[in-house]
Image 1 (tube, rainbow, N blue to C red):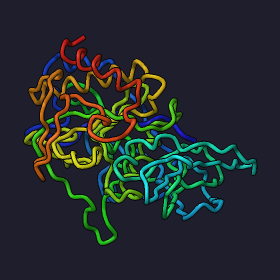
Image 2: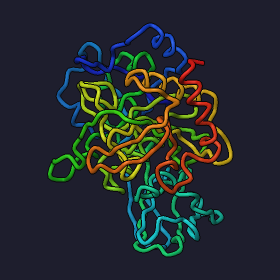
Image 3: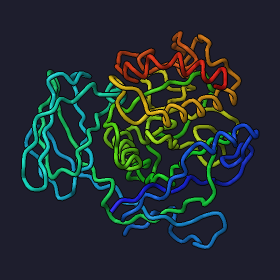
Length: 379
């Protein structure tokens, strides 16, 4: 059984803390975000929670399902021992999805119709894999995209796995008053960030803020369990893509809940270090350092986001541009601090402004001017 995700909570205070509310206006804005309850179901204990005091002030122990996975190669039919919430796909030879397809098999053995793979989304555009909602299927069959080589797939169950007990701070976490779900509060398994030898797969690196890029995840709209979707994206990015973490700095579901993305340590606000520099994510290949990525859950090629998600995005972007002192309606020259590559973009851009992709969807892309105006005017 799945219940909604836990309320957002704070982490330990520091020079720039995750729990500090800077300014009364931000605190008022936070009230518009729905406070979720915990998403739990499942008997392994998270190492971060082991040996800690359950009665420690400011924390609570929540239970989340450990993500289970089964991998396969090629196009042969796949049957799994787990109910499949999502199928992750990755291939070489092309970054196109044309000609590719999937059909799902229900638990009763009935076979679904072939469905195209869609536009591929952010991850494929950045050289990673594709995530497809599978609605608790028992198996699937694939057609590789035209020109694809080395097709690999992974079946993911993010809702029915064994219990993981996680320490979650009991007070709301906020970015200048805008409430969000911390990584712990949406059930991020921090072990996924590490290699078998214990080293961090993608150690954090921080650079001064330059721009914000808006994405859509190109997944199913009206997802019944958005926190499970975030955990699936995390697994795809961290393990299947071998990026070591989720690629975005923040994600927003259709109910307006904001999720902390890329790990940035314990000393600053989410996505930042204590000095206000931005942790490098994995959302725009070649232009990631200093570029803060926000992804809306869903596909917005033919429809726009729901009003709750739109409002949450506006509030979040507004506090970020104020934090960094930039003009949300400006054109800027982004300069990659690692290799000097430059790109002229809007201060608030869409993924397609950086590279060839449909992201963040045609309808959402057309809304970016409206977003810039709303952020600038406070309306």
